[in-house]
Amino acid sequence: MQAIYDLVDGRVFWPPVVVPFGLDPFGWHGERESYREICDFALEKCTLLPKVFPLTNPLCIGRGRNEISSITHIEENNILLRKYELRVADHVLSMEEVQSPGDSSWKVRSRWIESEDDFETFLGLIDLPPSEPDIDAVKAKEVQIGEHGLPYAEITDPFAIVSEMFPTDTFYIKILNDTERIERLISLTHERLVACIEALCRDTGCPFILRLVGAEMAVPPFLSPDKFLRFEGEFYRQVAEIASKYDILTAFHCHGHVREIMDDVWSMGYNFIEPFEPPPRGNVSISEALTAAEGRGIVFGGIDDVTLTTGTPGEVREAVKRCLDDARCSKKPFILSQSATPFHDPLPERAKENLLLFMDLGTRG
Image (cartoon, rainbow, N blue to C red; front, side, top):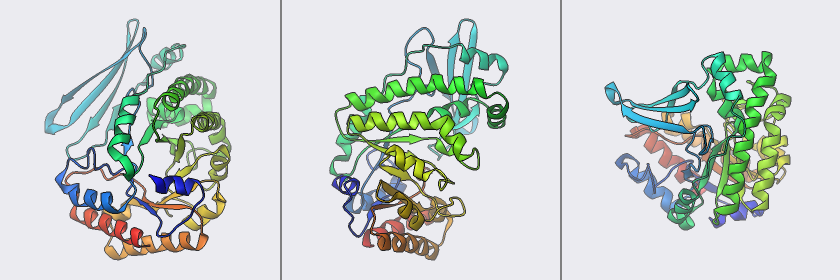
């Protein structure tokens, strides 16, 4: 944990802080035999930022006249189905997610807004109470981690929530030809999320990192930098101000093309930008990112998770060497990490060996 605060305070040391991103020896990963060796290495050598989810409600709608309920059952082939329902008078709105065997991630099968009637129903839901954050979950995770690191409290931003309410192609068409209504729906979601985040930062009473996710849906190539600021800027500025007021660290999460919006994010006051994927999936090198940061925050990432999943040991060595060389020469704070959490169980042997190699090389500098 202290290593994180040292970086935030501008103290740079070598070898760098190494974070096996998303790895949780105290939760899902620690319960699986195929991750045991990785968890043991990480507990001994690395800084840990396991994720915790203080908002389980997908739309951040709290208790009131319109409440979200969910049911889960097993389908054929052991696929897990989770269905959410929101009843509005005689209109039932729903969303379905599925989880495949061996994969802990959930994939959306059907969306909340499949018709114009659904869209109008959501626009009519004003003054909804926000969800109450699960403060106890964050506290429990902080106790589990102890001196190994900090909890990463993950919250989806309003643009990402709204974009996932529609079929993807429908949403981006409506951004262009139905902009006013899309902005209204984002604004309603924004209000609920800000209220929830304020409660989380004010009342949790232990250190954590507030991690906002979803910006990759609103940056190039999806939208231009000016449209990113139009749809997302005010929310991110507000959250940074709230977190700063309560001395909570903040992380801006965005895959892909972040070159064009880096300066805006640092200017808002975020402590971390991550995961800085290398080209071709990203569009900025670690060296360029460190230079652009100018000491305003911590550059975090550098290793494409695909390299760890499918690459050779030689490719992993080259990827880590490139990041370490860039960071060492800059003399600026840097966290070496992969770009995504490993989700599959059992973990393939190649991925396991590559993760161990990545952590070993990083911690030796």
